[in-house]
View 1 (spheres, rainbow, N blue to C red):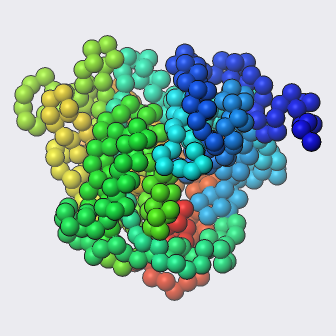
View 2 (cartoon, one colour):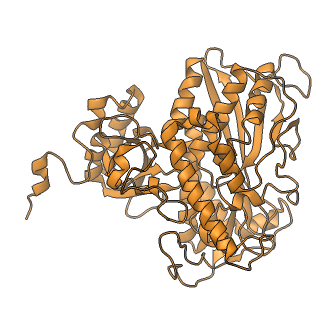
View 3 (cartoon, rainbow, N blue to C red):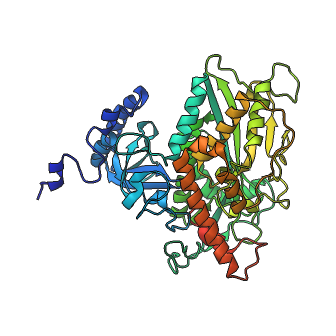
Length: 496
């Protein structure tokens, strides 16, 4: 039987709506040109993973045959609202059977939204069989307006604010993560369910650790790390370095500076592909901040930032004088914005229960106060002066944060600082727990300005559910709170 009854409705099942992109003018000239190139590349591809980033920073996808993607490319693709409703443990945190309180009517009944591929992100994944491509999409409501809960659109709006001022933010990624060896064991389904994560992957350390940058320790993981480096280069990511950090099998991956949206897209692609490539080789990669494993150290995500004039191509942070330790007035104002919003935006930089274990005195190079200094890794914001390469490094983030929301919050705070500089020397303290960060975020008018009421409300519900489940578990166990708990290991180690 060759006929397809659903075609009578003018559309293929689950494939958006005919001419959705053209009807609402959703692509610019660059995207339209890229789409033509994608159609040529589809001749050499079997499958396409159509991906978007959920509020937690996790890649959600559907895989379609290449010929189906030819329709998806311009029609979009229907996706369930489920990823907007679940917290990190897959508990339903946003009511979809009644008024959710989020202000998005389309969530009622968990109705579909339309995901429109961004053809500029189309990538053929290296060394895959069948031949598979990956493409990121933007979320839209049925009327062609951006979905209020779309985190990629938040960053797109912030970047547009910079563009209105003839400015372009530049981002460098420096990410710490753990490589461990899978040691067998059950798949983690026992006791699993909605809000009940099963056992974390059983792993073993790949080396003893605690010999920072030791070449022999890097070599002990080179049979995995070197192919990963080659894969990242093949994906077109501007890899700068792979190095061994302090913990057992703890690696740091850095990338050359990119434009803000490119950096966020790169972070999502990097984390997802590294986890998948390691699993295929019998290893486990985790971006959880502090796993529940003996002698493991905490991991951070250091975000390097600067701002360039699109008129002169000059770095706004570069000082006019040649003083070794110097940054421009614009740069200082930008830093002031980061410090002023550090507490209320902390939830977007450190969004998990586990992440707050790192912001503690025992981790000497992790920030514990809201401050900045030149070339000082113990400060929250480290300034790296260097003429045209002058930039700032915010060391607060955890590696599993949503890249679009983390970067957007930094850029928003920095732009606020540059627009209305304030002479302040003290700032509210950093939160010490997810619950405290949630309270600061909930009270923040700046968070609402950045995200819009629906997304802020949704994030509050998601994080309230996560924090409440942890609190309930903590009240029912004798597990010491001074160490990473079994709840945290189950919740984050496998998924992130």
